[in-house]
Length: 242
Figure 1 (cartoon, rainbow, N blue to C red):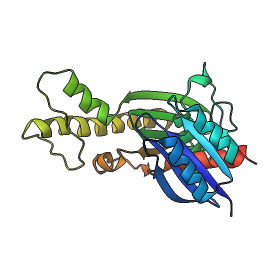
Figure 2: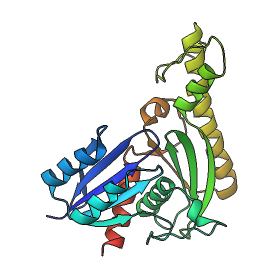
Figure 3: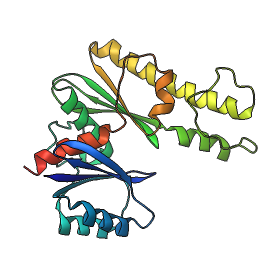
Figure 4: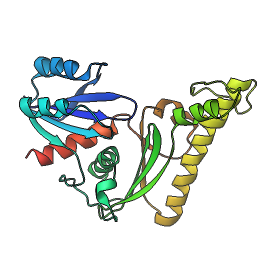
């Protein structure tokens, strides 16, 4: 049975998904000593293939280990993607954005797609019906918004997001939560409306760690999938390991 490790190294967490014959079976967050933990995972699951999407400077030894133990592919704009990136500098497009774009094309081929990720930043990634990844926009993510209000003021506390926020905050914490969570929801819906006005029929896809907090506040019809980036990585892996 063919097993593939899909690794996503983001600004906040290092995580991976285990696929067996195309089915996502398990998601694992790497521990502080990532190299040792990864070796344990390789020993346990004996994957045949691996693919890495990374937006950080990770240990070079991680890639060396993956090359030694698996058929390894490092995602970049040079990978076979099932889409093109006709922008001025395609090499500057983040691997995580490429992965969700590929997932959108795989899920809704030959359609206009706006794939939105909720991570350290919110990224809006537009892929047209000709499978051209044209770019999009980037804005601050939830934790960044909370942290900036705390760090750039003298007295505002650092709070966390919560889906169950009031419209009218009744203390400092709920005022901050209402502003960030509801503000992000309206930003996302507003961006979707702009794309709707320009492109008409298209799909909006949403993924990322803050999905459970934001989704209850979105009224637009959205295809929500917390594992979209991993499914995109797996789709790319199958092409590049063929």
